[in-house]
Image (cartoon, rainbow, N blue to C red; front, side, top):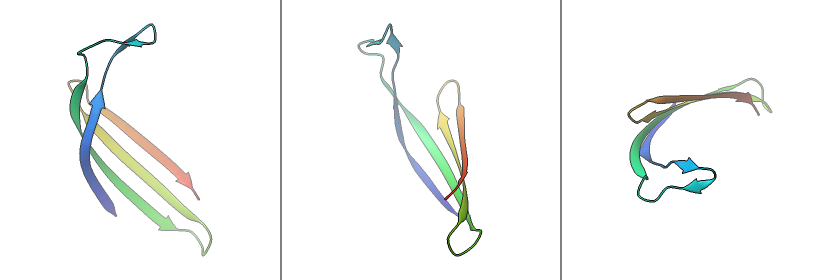
Length: 64
């Protein structure tokens, strides 16, 4: 298992144009789990939480 902390820059766009001065930094935290299915295959799950006024959770699951 691995985990990470970092910064995430947010911004808003209106009609494809970024609004000036609306960029903000937010915290991001993530955890990654991987499991070897065989010698050639593994399964991985990644969860990230972006800490803003409206927290966002991002979950990715896949095989490789």
